[in-house]
Image (cartoon, rainbow, N blue to C red; front, side, top):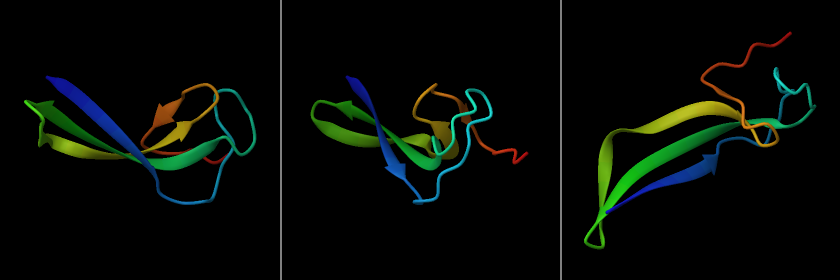
Length: 67
């Protein structure tokens, strides 16, 4: 039994992180979760999430507040 998250970067536009204040570190990411059981993949309920993520400080949020 294994849970797997696949990350897909949705756009090429980057933003400033509200936590670490680094420019161009936040991008819109889609995360798809699935369960692997006996070498078969099963999609989990509510397995799609779209959110903004910072690749430096690991900040995550569904919305990006532009200052």
